[in-house]
Structure formats: C-alpha cells, structure tokens
Length: 371
Image 1 (tube, one colour):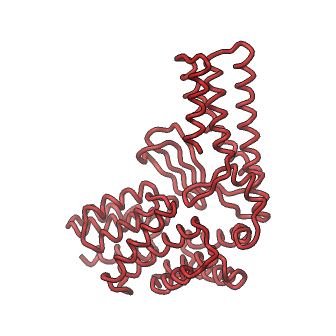
Image 2 (image 1 turned 180 degrees about the vertical axis):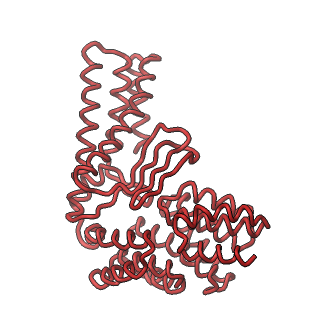
Image 3 (image 1 turned 90 degrees about the vertical axis):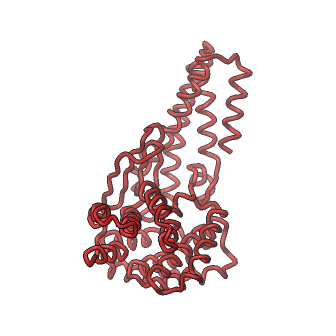
C-alpha cells in the first residue's frame, strides 16, 4: 500500500508542473508528516495512558541505547525517522489504543490540511509537493493493516473496535500479560509465574496466556517444558498468519534453547528450529527479530563467525533489556569459543548489568569464571 501511494504521489507531481521545489517539498513532506504521525501516537499514548515500550529514532546502525524499566530508547545513525512500540497496561485496552490512534490521525490530518491551504491559493510548488506527499503518508498510515512486524494506526482506528472472539480477548488480557513481562524484567520469577498461572487459569486458550507461561518456563531454564507448551499450539485451526508467525518464532527460540540446554538432541532440534524460523519469516515475522535464535543455532553448529555476526545484529535490533542481555550472552559465548576470553568478559559487563540473573548470562559467566 505504501509503495502504491508513493507512486501515485509521484504521478500527481509529474502531471502538476513538476520542478525542483515540488520534489523538495515532497521529500520534506514525507519526512515531516511521518514524524507527525509518530509524534501523534506518542501524544495519544501520554494522554490515554498507553505504555510506550520502545522508541527508535533513526535508521541504520545503533549509536546509543537507553534501557529503563518498561522502556527502551534506541538512537540510530541517521536520525530521520521515528517508530514506536505501544502496549496497553490499563483497561479498557481497545478504547485506549483507539483514542491513541485517533489523536495521531487528527493531528496529522490537521498538518496535511494546513499544507493544502498554503499550497492551493497561489499554487506554490514547495507547499504543493509537501501536501501531495504528506497526503500519501497520511493515507498509508490510515490504511488498516496488521502483520507480525508492524501495525498501522489505521488498523487501531478502523479494525480494532470491530474485533470479537479470541482476537479481542487477546487484547483485553494484555494488562495481565504486561504484569508478567514487568516481573520478568525485574527478575522476580516467582511473581511472574504466579501471574502467568493466573492468566492461564482465566484464559487457557489465549496465545498471550500460553506465551507468558512459556516465557516464565524459559527464564527458569525449563526449556523442554516451554517447547512443549508452544508446540501444542501447532494443532490449532483458529490461528491467522500473524499468529502462526509468532508461534513459529517462539518454537524456533524454544527449540534452540532446549538444544543448547541439553534437553533435546542437536541432530533433531537444530533442523527443527531452522524450519520453524524459516516458517515464521514466511508468515511475515521480521528477520531481524530472528537473528538471536539464528545466532544461537550457528553457535550450536560451531560456526562461531556467523554466530558472532548474527548476535551483534540481534543486540543492535533488540527491543527489550532481556533480549539485549540474551544477545550479549551469545556474543560472549562466541568470543569464548574463539579463544578470546578477555573480550567475552568485557561483553558480559553490560549483560550482567541488564540481567545478570538471566539463565544464559549466568551460565556464561560461570563458564568464564571456571576457564
């Protein structure tokens, strides 16, 4: 949809007396209206108490990160674009997310309307280019679409209120799911397990319930049990492609953990994990979110160069402190396997600061101390 609207915007500019100023306005309009769309989501989240769990500023390599409880901020090489990760921690969940998207849509529409008011009376080329491109960005943002990698504001605005059945229940259960996540990030596994058990008792068929339970099992190093819980979902017939992407990604990660933890033979687990990761990506799961699992598999197969490269990618694209600590543990293990224990010790400094209790971090630290 975004490519189609961009093409239409270019056609309009070409047919409407193009010039350097028009295309300059279009470039600025594309950037500015996208920024307003994201800032509108941020404003709406603050107004309606929706948690902003991730803020990414820019594109390219990671320059600096700030990992705080409940939020991760990443500054990248070229700070032109911004993206947010939103999650609701208070009921009513769908109403809060809808109001957040509405705030973004209204603010962005006001900016685009103002651009047209400036452009049309005197037919000014720069404002005209700004208005045409800004309209395309706005329409792209309002087009309802949801995948394993991203959800548009338009989906929250137009599709979310009409949800029913299990999919609606998944959203309404997110405040309890986030309590599990918060407890895990704090290293309070007992509290996380108690809440996850309550969640499963209340909503035994929801993917978020089973996922929360699997997360607790994983961080207790009960990898085989986590894999069994996720594998049981494969027989479900009510899963959409987006759901299957998440299930397969979880299966790939759980399988890799089970092999690494000695709870599943490598000759069985590694091919199964790779098939699951490939399947997740075919269903739209972003590849950068699979790099941590792929790095782990490369490490199991003694491909230390690939493991190090993939783990560094996973570190740079991680969306939480726990995910970053896990990637750092893989980097340290790859460095140890290559005989560079000094580099591994340096790597583990940040991992231990983020989550020294994490099983893979603690185990890596113990191995390094012995060596």
